[in-house]
Image (cartoon, rainbow, N blue to C red; front, top):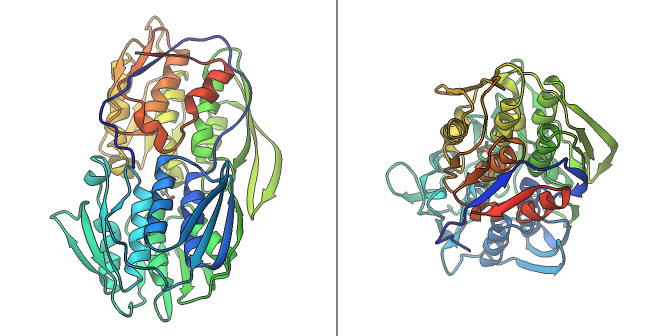
Amino acid sequence: MAHVATSSPLSSSATGALTGRIRVPGDKSISHRSLMFGAMAVGETTIEGLLEAEDVLGTGAAMRALGAGVTRTGEGAWRVAGLGVGGLLEPESVLDFGNAGTGSRLTMGLVGGHAIAATFVGDASLSRRPMGRVLNPLREMGVDVIARAGDRLPLSIRGPKTLTPIAYRVPMASAQVKSAVLLAGLNAPGVTTVIEPIATRDHTERMLEGFGAAISVEIGSAGERIIHLEGRPELKPQHVVVPGDPSSAAFAVVAGLIVPGSDVTVENVLLNPLRTGLFTTLVEMGADLSIENERLSSGECIGDVHVRASRLKGVVVPPERAPAMIDEYPILAIAAAFAEGPTVMEGLEELRVKESDRLAAVARGLEANRIAAREGEASLVVEGRRAGVKIGGGTVATHLDHRIAMAFLVLGLAADETVTVDDVGMIATSFPSFRGLMEGLGARFADA
Ligand code: S3P
């Protein structure tokens, strides 16, 4: 896996109107899962539109190291020869997940569900992120863990001969934790139950059902989601069509709203309601944003997101919406910088443990570009446009975080002065075609 040794800075500056129609690459969450579930099915899964970015390619390499056949057959087209639940083999070398939280945490669930040992490593960003949230329920299921203090990478785990199915209440809003427990539970005898007090993205549940698992979701008396998964199913191979990633589309959507005169359509975007919190918020801010050509594909709602440059106003974003837009706060903060009046974002504690401490990284990046912002423990207030203040002109520290890099490059497209980000290397982890697609719409970038 590529580890960036030297940093490559990039600048963006005000540009004319952005116009055109683009397609962004496949959804990252669904791409990871299609490789993993393909590996757990009996027979050959085919994938169309897989996100070919470092994070997902790392998952493909891990599935191969665990014994699955993973082959690229064309652009975005992949074939996975699955081993069946219980069929993973012990890898001969360490599993390197680079920058990828989803790849590493979900694979810990898979490995923990097998009587094999594996060692997980990652880059400096991933090695700082908390893994105890996944390891603790796995320990309850009987998995052995060797990890340094604080449960950070590198670490090794060994699954037991027979896993104990558990009922686990996820203590934070995390689809990764939910999914890791369910993936381990795939190979436990009996029913594994996961309770999530606040709904998070449900791709694991939907896709496991599609692969033939017996999985059910009920809503408890306090509104919590209670997920039951029957262990040891025979998963059936599928043809998975991966829709465009709304978290990648977000950058072009916000750019189209803040660059005067723009008219941009992002086609074929996943519109799962647990992923579209940003679009809802932008509409509340007064965005001219419409969904066209809405349709169903592989059981998910998809559509074309059409935006025209708009006068935005600040809003209060309800904290309970956070899981449905958790990866979109950096780019929402950029939209908020162009709004009239403050935008208040709360319930952001999970932003502290993403690829970087995104709350701090966003606040520092805004300040460096003369945008007033107040950072709280789990909140951010962005003041919005101030008369007479020229924004931009700063350099942003990206801390190995792809979304910080892309969000601040979008800022530069509408700012008064050039914005520089210190390193764009990490954009390749989720959206390698970002620069080319944005330039195709008319964006102006320069190597700094
Ligand atoms: C993801 C879950 C989220 C999200 C990440 C992808 C997933 O992480 O931030 O980009 O695919 O399950 P958390 O579960 O840590 O919130």
